[in-house]
Length: 73
Image 1 (spheres, rainbow, N blue to C red):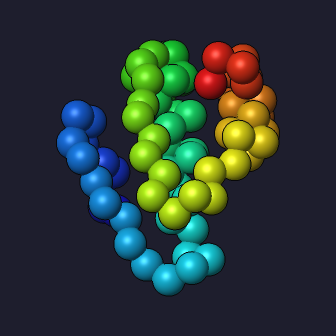
Image 2: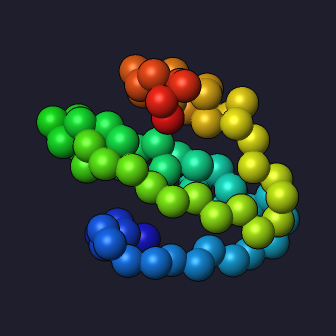
């Protein structure tokens, strides 16, 4: 992604099943919640799941690994 994603923009990720789209979006949704001192934005994200494969358990795992409260994330 050569430089990352610009905050405040809307992105649409597409690709074949299993290419990592969902994982990328979940990771980004958690990362923006990190404090600024840890590379986050101390903010929130809107996650729109159009395929019905959202996994709250995966968000819990990602948030826990980053030191965030999984319930809040």
